[in-house]
Structure formats: structure tokens, C-alpha cells
Length: 124
Image 1 (tube, one colour):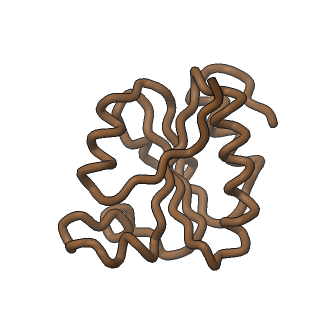
Image 2 (cartoon, rainbow, N blue to C red):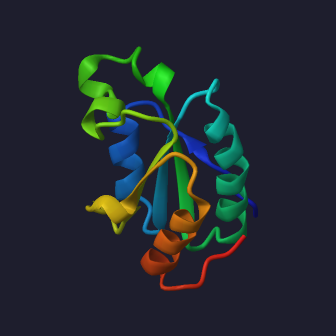
């Protein structure tokens, strides 16, 4: 069965999802008005369908996130300052380091991170 990205709404959704999914999770911060976000979105959907056993995609709408109670907002927790911004979670653990934080549209870096984290060559 094909699966596309899952939209999450706040910290509780995020924690619940990452604690219950053992795949590599891409956390994508986006906005509906963001051009590079619109370019990235179908690629993430394609990856989540093609590699559904290895990869899951969580999408956080930055505009909606700012309307949540302060203790539920993900944008300040992840210090997102530009869109799109992508992070990775593996085994329930946020992946640390600049290599695992992608700001803007960078397909080569995205595929490289996924290849390293899944241990499998990831291509479109």
C-alpha cells in the first residue's frame, strides 16, 4: 500500500509518531506559500511511497504551528528560521549535526542523508 506524508500538529503528535515508528523519519517544515517547499513536497511523497518500509515523512506547516499553544510549537524547538527545513529521526532519536539539517531545497543532500541513515542506496 502506498503511503504519503503525514501532517502533524504540535509536539504531542510529533512525540507520539516518532516513538511508534521505527523507520527513518523525515521531518519537513513547510508553508503553503513557499516555492521551494512546493518543489520538495512531491519528492518527499515519492520517496515515502517508493521506500515505504524504510522511510516515513512528517510534515509541519510552519504557519499553523505558530497558532498552537507555545508549549506545542515545533518551529521554536527545532529553531527553524527558513523554509523548507528538513530534519531526520532514526530509532526515535533526532539526528544531530549540520549534515542532518537541510535548509532550502537540496535534493543531493536529502538523498545522501537517507542513504546513510537507511543503509540502502536511496534514489528517486
